Length: 503
Image (cartoon, rainbow, N blue to C red):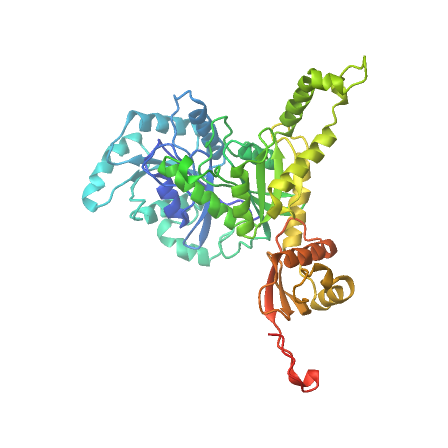
C-alpha cells in the first residue's frame, strides 16, 4: 500500500455541504449529495492532488453531539476515529444559516482534540456574500469562504492545508519548494505507484450483515452496524494488506427493488452500489442464512453475473441458521409423525443433529436457485462471531487468480484435440459442431475465441458443456467464462479444389 498521506478531515453538522466539498476536493462523485440531511454516516475516504502534492480527504457524517439515538451516536464515534488520524480538520458551516449554537458546540469539541482546524464557510456563491462569513471569525480560527458546488475559494483552502502539512514551504512558494524536492514523509502524486490491489465489493440486500462482515475482515469498526435496514448509504472503501496481498473492500448499500425505495438518497445509494459492483474484481454476495436465498438475492446475483464479476457466495448468520434448524428438528421430533419414525422407546437426541448434512442440503438449495452462478464457491460463516470467516480470503484470492489466468494457445488446442469429446456435447439431430481453433482473447473475465463450422451461435447447452470441460481442466473457480464465436471459411485448395463450404 502507498505510504500514509496527510489526512484532511471534513466535519460539521448535517446538511451544510460536507459531501459536496468532499466531491469537489477529490474530483469524484463518491459521496451522495441530496437535500435530505443525515445521508453520510460512515467515513468516506478519497484522495486529492494540489500543486503536485497528494493528500487524503475524509468525509464524515453530520455530527449531533447530544443526540442519543443509535445512528447519530455511531456517526459521532466514526468521526472521532477519523479525527484521531487527522493532520487538519475542516469545520464546514452554512453561510446562509449564520453561526448556530451547534456550530459553536462543534468548534468547542474540535478544540478538545488538540488538532488544528479551520472553518470553511460554504454556500458563498458571490463576492457580495463574503461578508456573511465575518461572524465566524468569533471562533478564533482561520475562515475560508467557499462555494463547494462551484469550486470558488477551494484553492485558498487547499493552499492553507498544504502550508499546514509542509510548514517549511510558504504558500506562495509551494511550486518552488516542490522543485527543491523537500524531504517530507509523504509521497508526491507521481511517486505513488499503486500495487495490484484486489478490488472486492460486498453486495447484498439490506440488513444481511454486509457492514459487520467488512468490519470482521479488516479488523476494525470501519462501517456503522445497526439493526436498522439501510444504515449504509454511501460506498465505504477500505484498503489494507493481508499475507502480502493488497485489498480494497467496498461495503455497498443494500440493494433493493425500485418500488421499495422512497427517499432520493435511497435510490442514489442503489445506483452507487451498482457502480461499486462494476468497478470490483470479486463480488462477495452476502445472503442471510436464516432467511435463505430470496428473489432479491437472485436479482443482485444476476447483476454480478451480467457485469462479469467473479463471485463468492457468503451465507452469513450461519450460527443462527443452525440453531433455528436444530430447534425445528426438535419440534418435528415431538409430533406424532416424528415419533412414528423412531423405534419404540427411542428418544430424540438433539445432540444427534447433523449440521454437516444441513450445510449439504443448504448448498444444494442454493445451487438450484442460483443456477447461473454454478461456478461461484460458497462459504458458510458468521460475521458477528467470526466463525469460518477466515475461509473467505483464500476463496477471494482463488477467484482473483482465476480471473486473470491466461492459458497458452498451444495448450488450449492440445486440450481441445485430445481431451474434449465435441460430439458428446452436440444436440441430437443438430449439425455436428467442429471447433477448428481456440485461443484466449483476454482476461478478467477469461474470454475465448472459437473458430467453428457454425454460422449460427452455438446452442447454450453446448456452450455450457464446453465451459464445464474448460473449468474442470483449468480451474476457473468463481469467475465467469465467456466465448466469442467466429465462422471459419474453409480454403478451396485444402479440400482438393472442391467447394466445401461450412456456411
